[in-house]
Amino acid sequence: MKKGFDKDFLWGGAISCSQADGGFRDGGKGVSTQDLRYLDPSWNREQVEEKHHGSPFSKAEFDQALKDMDTMYYPNRRGIDFYHNYKEDIALFEEMGMKLFRTSICWARIFPNGDDELPNQEGLNYYRNMFSECKKRGIKVFATMLHYDIPVNLVIKYDGWKNRKTIDFYCRYAEVLFRELGDLVDYWLPFNEFNAGRFAPWDGVCLMQDQEENINQSIFQCLHHQFLASARTVKMCHEILPGSMIGGMIARFETYPATCKPEDALQAVQDEQYSNWFYTDIMVRGEYPKYMERYFNMFNIDIQMEEGDLKILKNSKVDFVSFSYYFSQVSTSDQTWKKTAGNLIMANKNPYLETSEWGWQKDPIGLRVTLNKVYDRYNLPIIIAENGLGTTDILEADKSIHDPYRIDYLRSHIQCMKEAVIDGVEVIGYTMWGIIDIVSCGPLTMDKRYGVIYVDLDNGGKGTGKRYKKDSFQWYKKCIETNGEVLD
Ligand code: BG6
Image 1 (cartoon, protein in one colour):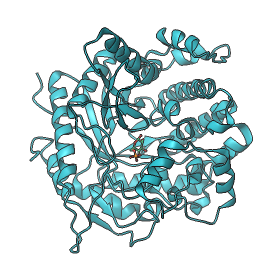
Image 2 (cartoon, protein in one colour):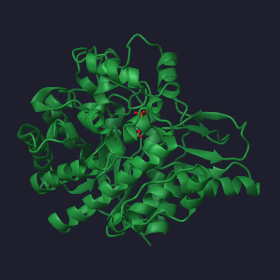
Image 3 (cartoon, rainbow, N blue to C red):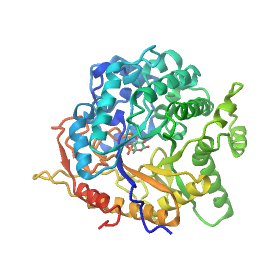
């Protein structure tokens, strides 16, 4: 029986390019879909939440954003300017003792229009330099190849993921990454949170809901194309870079039956199948699971497939499973059950759990439950690609930041991860989200902070941009130094 983490456990931190990089038009980068999401910095919390949960990205916003190319009311154009600061930021990661850094590669930096014949050398140089910096500092690289942002030209010209051509464009991009950056990347992830398309269609599959007659049909068609792109990429990775590790990731929505009523138990099984297992089952088992036939039938979804598609899925299996984990919820047959916010979805409330400032239900034990379930099902190594607490922090006059709430969150989750390791689950890494404050993905604000490193910028991008260590920085450093043994 294991007593704790293996000595080579990969303690890490994660960010994504669109939320961190900035350098919006530098280095020959094209415009990407995440550059088009607008935030008015004068909005109050309520207005921000209303926009985030109540009004999905529309065609009018899309058109306006393309006209507004010179304004910066689009937070992902600014990020935290990691593009120009990466050396200093990675030096802080080294100081913390980080072993693994997860970030995403911006497709539009490599192929500015998505359909270009040749890659943009400046974009490749940027990633070679940045990843080399990590290597120089003893940090391994975990590269997400697509974290919600595709070159906007692919949406304008081809309808994005609705078109099978996008699969080929993606595979060309993937091949360039393997050939040009393969010596620097240790872990690959073709797609961030595969199931996000189902819950946040603009982010996950680049669909504007007001342009779709049957949004569910379109989502699952796009997802089918992404599954094919992912499967071809996994196969290609194994051929070009034998021995490399490439995985599949979802946003895990851990759920418990709300009561011991059989209806609730059944609901929990189905929620789990439709929101979680469907995606990882395809990436690991290589086929559409049977339970989805009934679901597709129920919602009149008819996925158009070409001959050979199922074989493509069958012939590739990921080497590890990955997920983000922030909260859990309950499953119920009661339509009037109280709800609260959660990552990507509105969740059913669990009376036994406390919520974060943003309403997400904190459940460290749920992480242990999830790890056990995922490992039991697939028996593959697991990397927790995201986990952390988004909340406001106060920068004191002496530039300290006291964040005991974040330390509590991390401690309790890491303790449960350790218990899962002792249970026998093969967890090989943990990349805390977002190790340094970045633009939040849902609300697009800076005030929802996850980092152990504070970045002095407000929701409108104003501030010095300077980095300061929070109390949690020292705490995480100690955790890494002692390989998860000292957590107080
Ligand atoms: C995940 C995304 O779903 O949740 C991240 O992969 C995101 O990009 C994270 O930042 C937390 O969500 P939010 O909306 O609080 O930033």
